[in-house]
Each structure stands twice: as C-alpha cells, then as structure tokens.
Image (cartoon, rainbow, N blue to C red; front, side):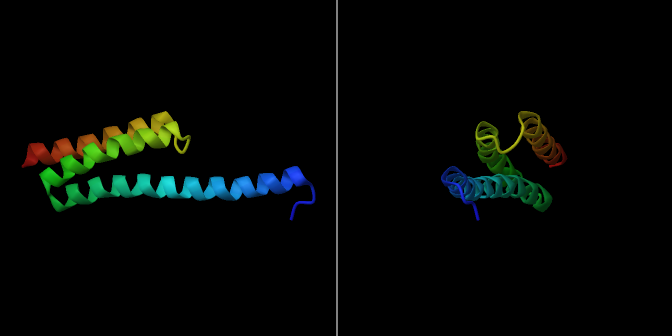
Length: 90
C-alpha cells in the first residue's frame, strides 16, 4: 500500500478507472459478438440491426481511449464485410 497521500489518491483513481475501462471494453466486445453471432446464424435483418448498433459503440470506445482508431476502423470494416457477404449470399 502507498505511504504518500498523492500515491494513495492515485491508487484510488486507478481502481475507478480500471472498472470503467473493463465495463467499456466488455460493452464493445458484446456489441461485436452480437454482429458475429447474427451473421453465423444467417439472420440478415438482425445482423444489419446489430451492425448499426455496434458502430457508435465502437466509435465511443475510441473517444474514451479504450482502443486505437485504426483498430476501431478494422473492426467496423470486418463486421461490415461479413454482413455484406451474408446479404450477397441470401
């Protein structure tokens, strides 16, 4: 445990920040997984709806500093490609 007041405060802040980051990352992964599961199930309408919902969540993660903007772009592009592939097949 920290002995200096500023270090104690930093420790408290780190705990709060980590909890916030874990929750945000979980929300991001859940959104991505929702699109992937809908595509794998072959449900075109659900996949499109989940993709529309996932976009702002991914962008929000970038703004909060959870992921890099290039990673966000890569996720969005890959999800969009999978949904398009599903639409073309069906």
